[in-house]
Length: 255
Image 1 (cartoon, rainbow, N blue to C red):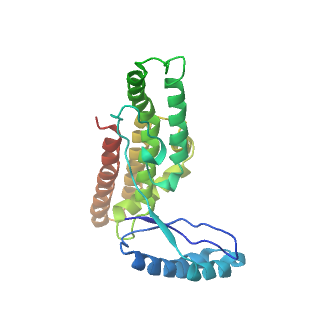
Image 2 (cartoon, rainbow, N blue to C red; image 1 turned 60 degrees about the horizontal axis):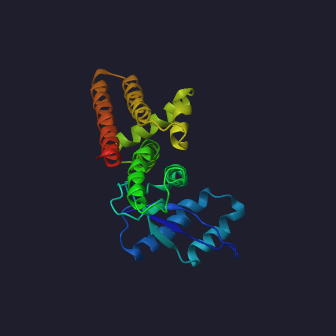
Image 3 (cartoon, rainbow, N blue to C red; image 1 turned 90 degrees about the vertical axis):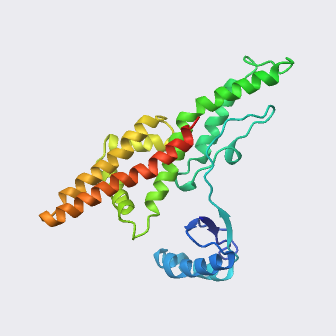
């Protein structure tokens, strides 16, 4: 279970720090362990001008927490009810895609429920609204699914443990893939921002990262014995990419 923790109030000013924590279930253990993490791991990387205040706040202030949740969208079956935002669809906040999805949902609804399409004085308007909501669910799916899948998949990669070699290989491959420039960086940026709402394009780039990683791993072979190990690493990488991507794709596009 992931938690977002926010130490606040450095010298009277409210400040927020979002940090994800894995496998700490008990609230007391979470707070104690995370305070040590803030002081011993996070603080040394902060600028000296704020480090002492940060450590003081981490030790003395109360840590607030909330769960990070993944909520795939489902079609609405209740007449008279419209859900938007986190009540309808959630993804990890890593990519900041929540507001993008929510605002585009508003755009779709504004068009589908406009007065030119539905007269609310019509006794049949509830049924017409319900019909438009079904269209809304279809219209939003491409853009929202791309942002949702990317958020969850990228967090899986960047939060990989040191012991998880395939995920670490994929993470390094992703970074090097972006460094190639051109469409290898512009297309992922467009997918993240919602300006390229194409699940097919997302699929192509995600597995292009895995294939590029396989190429880099195999190229690093130094001997025949090492080659067999690198073949295993490359196959583990493509398998891990599949295990990460396909369940997320299914959660977004299942009937």
